[in-house]
Every structure is written in structure tokens, then in C-alpha cells.
Length: 579
Image (tube, rainbow, N blue to C red):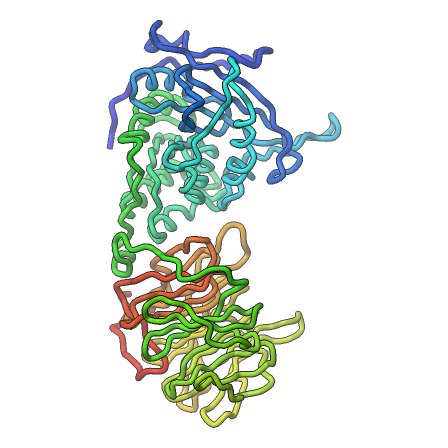
């Protein structure tokens, strides 16, 4: 959608001044003599622990209307003072078109060379172009607290709002993707994004954003995009096409997004022209909160609008192994404390086993018993009314699933560099057999709804393997079948526990949240958990329409539109996938 342009003077020359404080806006004709001028002050920061050894300059803009009695809204910009932002803020704050905003303008870091014969290490691409939360943490844990240690030119303390709805972040080129990434990773801290000629290309992984936007459960972010048709087209990608992909993906997922496209190149000319209108739109309706999008059709098939994760219980060391019985009650383990707990249908949590032998993965069988991988004794145990019996010895297992015919499949991950990772099959009579080896770290395991396929997560890669179960219950036709997303700050997906719904979707606990795959092996949706952790999943509740997630020291639940398929029940044949 095109916005009307408000032209303001573009400063083409930046002069380094010895003074650290100066007023801006006098040379902008539209500002007017009656508009109060804010003050911009320059500082240097060289104490970063997140980017150790770096030094950088930053500037703080404080409008005259700022009152320290109320924390101010915040605008953060990468790459110095851009877009004549202080003058624009002077005018828009005076006209009450945006709230009182303190601006923080930050350059990228440099690691200074130890000698004149050597180059500094320039951190711009490293800090700005990469995905992950590192740069957001740098702003939130280091720069913004440093800003609040300062005071205004007339001695007023600087107080910044901590509410993401009160914060906007922007930049140009690599600074633009850095702004978007900060909001993407931390929407609790930044929810309004101004992006000019954004580097959403294959320099450090930014090219995946158009795909992730379509799959992730939408976040409360509002985005303004600007680019021109003669922008860069180089080895890393095509900026012009990448920005259009971003706009289409944001629109597809139902985000609030506006854009201005032009004919310009990789420069700030058009961005400076449209910045006032973009800022007006980004702050529209403030303080009403920025809303999240509706999500993709695939996501809307699964989640209820307005139905979020809720906390079941917390205070554990590490939770794992959720398993649901025929009633829909869910049992989970706190492995380090060697205890098993039960979540009743009314949501109350009670102690089930005071000593679980450090149980990890577990599942109910068709006989109603709870089958458990006991990591403390290298056994598979079965519990009946709280009393254990040994099913198999000598298995250093991780997770298991029990088929409707009583066959048990157990993952046995590698514990040393020389030990092979295994998959065990235990027949109903107790006979055990290794039915596959060779995975780097076999972890979560589950069955397709029709129980003809076994799925095994390989934590140290991006794959979930699929095997066909033969008539003798052995495995055949092994494939790297499910292709998972891997976060930028890791070398693998960290795939762990899994479960399936009755339509054949596979739900995988990963580093990026719950990745929901279709039967054809493709990730359709990604649903993050509240604390960013998840080790295992199971459908529970009276109708098996509540997803239970073990998430580190906490357990969460979320009611969905779909129902889980239980391996202890008769097989279900879902509809074929849409290819």
C-alpha cells in the first residue's frame, strides 16, 4: 500500500563535531520556529560482554517534552542517526502524532587492531545480518541499561519503557534486518519495525525469513518496508525481490504490514522521504497494543484463536516423558529428582512415583500399564498400580512407544563417540532385538496413526527418520523423511519427543518450538512455547485435544482443534496427504 510522501531535507554530508551535545532540527524547513528542539548526545561504549572487545559510538535523542516522571517510549536505530530522525521526532511529537520518544542510535562494533599495520575487525555483518537473539540481547542487556545510566543535558534522569508496545526499532540494509530480527526474537521488547532496503538475503541466513514468517505462529509485530527496484542484486541475493517476499509473507500470515516501493537503489533517499509517514503509521493507535496476525491456513486448522499456552506446573529440574492413559490423564517425569507426576483431568498435579529410577520417556500400552525407560537402572519397566515389573534389562534407553499389539520400540542414543546409536524392539513376550543402528543420536519416537510407520528423531541433525514396520515387527526402508528447521545459533534441530494427531500430522519438540509436519515430511507450522524450551509432547485431556509440553522446569498445555492418536488404541487410517 502506497503512502503519500512528505519531503524533508536530506543531509548528504556528516561532519564530525568535537562537542558531544547539539540540537537538531533548525535546518529542516518544515520544523518551524515554534517546534521544541530535542537534544542529541554522543557517547562511546566499549564494555560489551555479548560482543567482547568491541567499541562503538551511540547517540541519545531526548525531546524537550520528555518528563522523567513517566518512562518514555523508545526508538532504536542501527548505523548511527539516519532518516533525519531527530528532526522528524521533534515535529511529530509536537503535533502529538506520536508519543514522547527517546531515540537511541547505535553503530556496529569494531575490535580495534593492535597495530597500524592491521585492520580492525568490523562486526557489522556479524552483529546485524545473522539470525538469533544475540543482537537483541546486546540492546536489552547492555545498551539500553547503559542509556538509563545517563541523564539529559539539564540533569533529568533518563527512564525508558520496558514494554515492547512502547518500543520501535529501525535501520537500513543490514541495520534493517537487525531491527526485524530484534523484534522477531523479542516481541516482548520491540513490536514496531521500520525496515529500509532490508538485507533479507543469503549473507548469514536472512533469506529464510519469508519461509519462517509463513510457518511460525504470528507474533505481535507491526512492520513498515521500503525498497527500490534498482537495489542490490549480488552474490548474496536480490534485495528488491527479497523485500517483496517479506511483504508477501507478512501479508500471508496476517501481520500488520505496509510498504513503499520505488525505483531507487541501495541508499537512504526514499527512506528519508517516507520516514515521517512510516513513523506515524508504526505508532498509530498507540497505546493500543500491536496485535499478532492470524497465521497461515495450516496453522488455523490446528489452533483456536485466542487460545494460548497455559502453565500446568513449575518448579522442577527437568521435565520429560509425558504419557497419556485411556482417560486422558497425563503422567510426566522430573528426571534429576527421579519423580513421576500425574496431571488429572481437572488440571491438578499430584505425585505418582516418589522414586522413578530416573525415568525418561514413557508411554501407556494396550494393557493399561505405564511403560518406562528407567535411565537409573538401564531397564524398561512397566507400572501397574504403581508397582514396577521388569520388561527388559540392559537397554540404556531414552524414549519409547508401545504399539497396539504390545510391541515396544525404544531409542538408545550414543553415549560415547564409539558407541553406536540403536533402536530396540521388544516383543510382547519380552524378547529384545536391535532393529536399527547408525543414527547420530536417536531420541524421540512415535508411530503413525495407522501404526505402519515408526518415526525416530535424530537430535544431532535436522531429520526425523521414517521406517516401515514389517510383518515380523522389524524395520525396513529407512529414510531421512521429515526435514526440520534449525535455528541460526545451533548446528542441529535438537529434535526430541514427538506425537501424532489423528489426521497424521507429526508434532516434534525442537529448539525452535513445536514443529508440526504433514505426512509428506514437510514442516507446515512452528508453535513456540512460552519459555522457549520443549523436550517432549503428548495429547491428553478427556477428548485428547490438549497438547501437553514438557519445557525444562515447567509443563504447559494448550487446547487445539485436533485430537491426538494413541498408539495403545486400534490403528487409525488418516486421509492421504495433499501433495
